[in-house]
Length: 87
Image 1 (tube, helix red, strand yellow):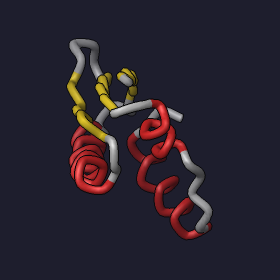
Image 2 (spheres, rainbow, N blue to C red):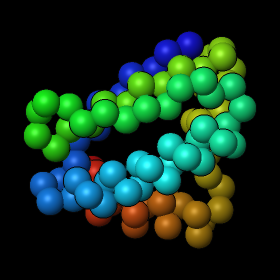
Image 3 (spheres, helix red, strand yellow):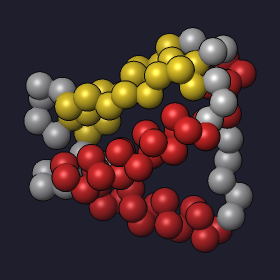
């Protein structure tokens, strides 16, 4: 199963976003069973990135959308992403 995501980031936050993406990519490829491909690309449009994912099947792809139940984890993710993503 293939998934394509387009993500825009705030101006001046590209380096921070790319640092987060490198960490998330490494974690996803090493920890998420069924992940065959997880690659971010910088698009031609300013402040825009494309993610291409490939999963063994739909069940594996759904693992990435499971909820984060720890309030601390939610807060940490929110703080990190809020600085980089256009929310």
